[in-house]
Length: 353
Image 1: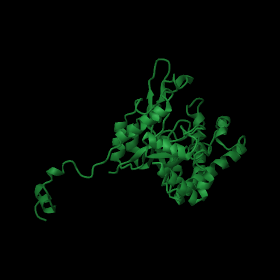
Image 2: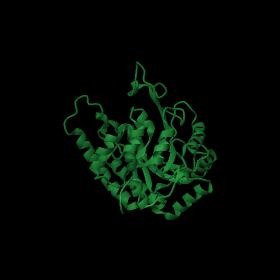
Image 3: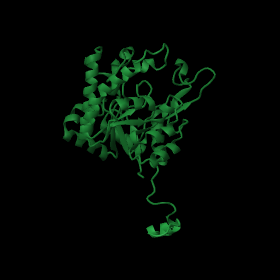
């Protein structure tokens, strides 16, 4: 077994225009002060990273890593969540997602999609230059508006959507392989890859690509009433990344999984600061340890109630307390009586050699 790394912190929810969240130097010092050993970086945020330079300059990457290490943290992974979202956008979501793109390609879905692909490619080159082996992303979505089968879905609609999704991602997965980087798709609402079944549909269409991995985040499973512990047993060989995020689902006589168009505070299902929700993290950490997950345990803080800085500090301690340092020997070695092949046969009552 292997011991996972951590605690790490995803910086997307903390980057801001105010100190200490407005620069790579300042935010890494702050993260280390909170108790983190690593940080996951949103590659779209120019306040933290120059993606163009990271993709082309090893000197820039060495300086980038050196600054983080001098401040007490490692770089865990790069994230391309927002760019990956734009690899596939259903027209119903054009206006909503347009703001994720660079200003010069907004309002033009074809140019926006090409820009998104180039951004994921740059991030893969940057990950390679930074010595990283995994990259977080979203899959994007073409079929999501048809999640509920009303009106009745035409035959072949979902299959066509997943065929196209795989067609768009296959070259990026091949690029990832060239870079020695796993693409870890966060299983997430709003994405065509939002549960195990949809991940399998995609995986089959990219020919079980070795670089196609999952970003495991149990909060999204709680909110759809999915068995997040069984999910680990089923997909542990494909889990390449782990977000430590909490959630709760408290259905009432008025609303359940769908949320009734209520605000985050008033939804039956809502994200909570780590340790404040319903996720059984003790069992998750135990299962991941038993399945030899040795990646980072990265806190993704999202909560509509608690202050983010309090959540960040509490999250670091929470993860540190939950990481299991795996044993190097069997607990019952003290009772080892010693044996050999002949002794084994005698114990079984088998005659001869």
